[in-house]
Image (cartoon, rainbow, N blue to C red; front, top):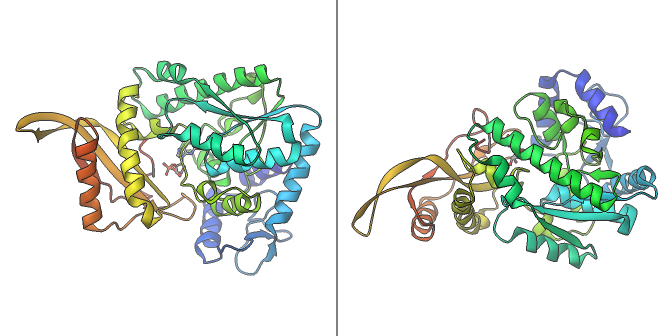
Length: 368
Ligand code: XMP
């Protein structure tokens, strides 16, 4: 399968070389709203069947990618059932739409409500997919996730707890659904960053030495050769609405990556309420990604003439092509002041709001 080949190639090439090639390709001005996938015969700079090339390249139509992947999924899944864990992000949405196109009602689209999503996310996803003729099952698993995260403060411990609960929940859902396959929206950046040891991404199990079979799943990752701009092209090709195709990346572990320290329902609620404001206020700037982060620290404030020792929210907004590197968004002062004022006024218990100026590297985009 091409994903296997991708892994072999990625493993065979020094990571620095790969990162460099991706940057040249994506920053070098080649991205347009026209088909952007490149196919060229042999090159050592390649990942799977869609080689990464610099300079001159043969343009491959996105239609062809969709047709090939649809056929591949149809062949692989056969008459069996498949399940896709739909988060509403562009990656999993594309996989769900691709899967539905390939195998129709043999696919179950499951939205696992882990309690770590943004405001109204489940409902929005169900409505969008109902419009495409795809029924989304919403399963409330928030109690399991909060129980697993209880008491944890170390970022990797939190990620591991999330990942284990996610696969356990999903494993149960797969067994209940009778599915043999799980479709996952892993993309090339996930694969590379996991290989680089920057992060243990939950969605590349094999890469971190976990056997998907032990979770009772065979995982199919039709997008692992693509970067985000390409995934958005495929989304448009599949008829997904702009709300999905242009959606900001949102990490698998959700708001748990934006709550520094212990992840409790109350602390997530604070980060979620601040996120609504940040997303609303920055929408017109169309940043690559923006967020509100709750720090694990407090600061003195004054409210209604009383001293408080309140929460600290960081506002982060970044510009990026592929999330491998990022620069802070240049937000103007009145806008920043408005965000600060709204967060202090509308989110209970917040006494300070900060704006994060750090690019990636040296920082990452998320906080854990
Ligand atoms: P970082 O924080 O590593 O994030 O600079 C790079 C991009 O990846 C997203 N991200 C994740 N996506 N599972 C995901 O599916 C994860 O565990 C995860 N962690 C970070 C992040 O939002 C950014 O777009």
